[in-house]
Length: 303
Ligand code: DON
Image 1 (spheres, rainbow, N blue to C red):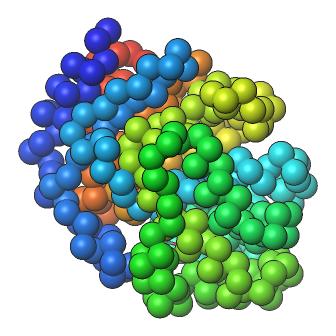
Image 2 (image 1 turned 180 degrees about the vertical axis):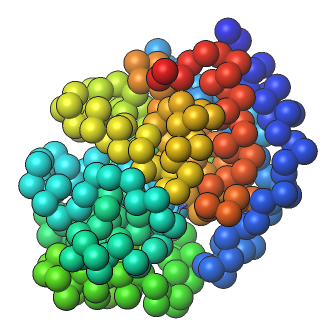
């Protein structure tokens, strides 16, 4: 398989979808993204790296950062983490409040906003700098080009924080939040506002394709923990569209409202795609289509 050609073919095939999705506008600065952009990149365990379209354009990774925050927290806490956050799909939108009351402040999984806020709270307690820990990891993994927090986007999220603040305060009322809410929110927003490009994101995700071992030789996760995170990506990584992603793509994926998606092919490679037009569940429309075509064309799904 000649991957550079395949990626270019897929980019051409998804062109008609560009502009059809809706750019996220609940974070006003994200609304400025251009929905006609599309990038797709692949990083392989054998060192291969290729991409197409806007694969070198950096974008706001948003919820994809939740994978890295979890991967940096789980090794410290192990099974104890799952006493503070569940690992079941929510079947609800990523910013939903409704289950938290029934389930006494225990978020369904680490990828909905409530669960990610608990993970950031835990990482802050462990390291004293949750966002800095995620950023340093991404900078080390992604390669020499710039990977940085977009402070304007972080500030825009902070200005429009009401819903995430409500989630955090509610969990605090159940005792499932240890640091001051505003401090955790600042770290969470800055972590979500990290910018990188598709090639960098694919490289940064390689440890998940390699059973927890990073390309630089660092072991971040045990084999078992890498399996656990991939499993939660498959079942919860794309929120109430996780069933659709499993059906169409058949890979562990994590999406973000910036329009990025990270997908893992265990033992082989990581893929990253970016296109800001979203479907109603908050996942990139063209990104989902490209990943669907990729696994259909190559047969490389986990099933
Ligand atoms: O907290 C938020 O709402 C955003 N920083 C992240 C949401 C997000 O990316 C959901 N993903 N599809």
